[in-house]
Length: 619
Image 1 (cartoon, rainbow, N blue to C red):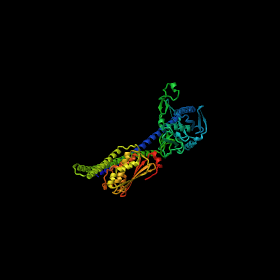
Image 2 (cartoon, one colour):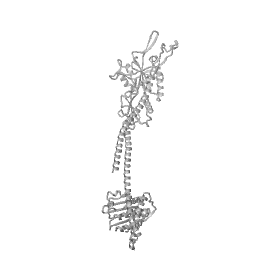
Image 3 (tube, rainbow, N blue to C red):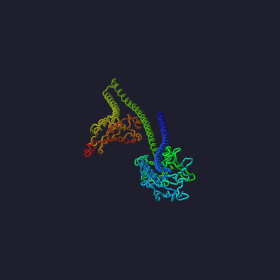
Image 4 (spheres, rainbow, N blue to C red):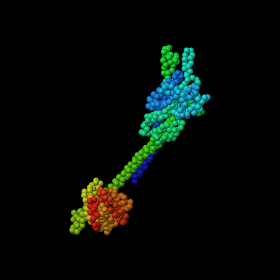
């Protein structure tokens, strides 16, 4: 009892530890999932930001290709634009997508027709007046609403909108320079009247999409193999999709794991823009160096700040690139397997299931260990009881044999009748000892795998031999054993000695548990391809609670213990092992006070089945 309480306490402690481990694991997985989600989101945002920077860098380089000095532009506008167009084509070719700048216009607010466009003919290097293409209608309406006082005049602050993502186009202002001479020195400064000329670069939308796709492949992987869906839409009209990595999937702002802006100028690239500036004390004329021997012009950085026009009470702000709220387009990225939160949630659930499964297996393993320990203790107790029972069983016949032998040796028994009676007693007790030793040896042999099918066996003959082996015990108990066997029964393939032992155990139990004057009926019959050996008695019977355990070694039912009937509890265990080794079955039906019926079912030899069907069944 104390050991059982100790085992229960240990089990409760271990169960509590498993529960604590499960709780800690759940919390730890939650923290890991949060960290994993943040890591995945940061990684995805880095990819999106790198893509945005790469795309905006190409746009900025294209913008810088058209950035020209005002005083040089005044001398040869068409020539300067042609050179700028060639630089732009070279920039596009370096990006891998040639021809992004498909047309160039010059807008001059000082001419006879302020705001009227002049189109560059790059082949001839000339400017010619043209009408605005319909693609610029939105841009013109916006320019006209801001223009004052003349509808055709392009105000300086409008030039802050360097990128028009709707057309799409780049707006490059050409500063007007003023020449000042004082004290023999010449300086060129921006005209205080502001920007009056503008270069409008019309971009090819298809080429921009091709550029975006090439950069997406670089930063997110091949379209078919990528783990992400990417959608690019215009900021002014989010439903207007510029590009989608999957034709049937459109990532909306609400579904995106990461969103960022794209299609803008990058200030870090603008600050690397270089232009020639006069050296100190040098003349501004291009031939001054040759004439006066002045120093050569030097390269220096020009800081350019582009200020976006005010759209609200906050006033104008500095144009920045790459942010979620910047750029003419928006990039929406989502994992193909679902949203990032759903992906992390599934990963957490999967890890939690695995962890709980491991803990569950540990718990089940612990229960098996406890159950095995309990079974081992029960088996040890039964073995001790078995040894005690065997010792008692051995002591009784040995005492009788010893007493009879001493009487014979001392000459106490004189007449022939008493000698015969003592001889019969010694023989019966010797048989009893032999049977007991045989049962123990049978059990040991069965556990060692001693059953080996050898050949065809006549079941009826083996049953008859088993009945003959228990006939002496049956006579002592005044129990009749009746055999009813059908003729022409087929043999079974098996071990004759093992089967005989099994039959003898069953018939011997029926005799042992029958009352004086009782009868045991043994039937051997065929059932298709099977042979049935049925042994029925009208003895004590077996309790329903004991029936599931009667085939366990050393187990004895309550009825047998209460009636103090001798036995070791290994007989039915031997029967079960023998029948299982012959691929058969054992069925027991019992009622307390009404007797027990044991049915052994064995498989007949296949080649004899035809003869079974033809043989007449007789009793």
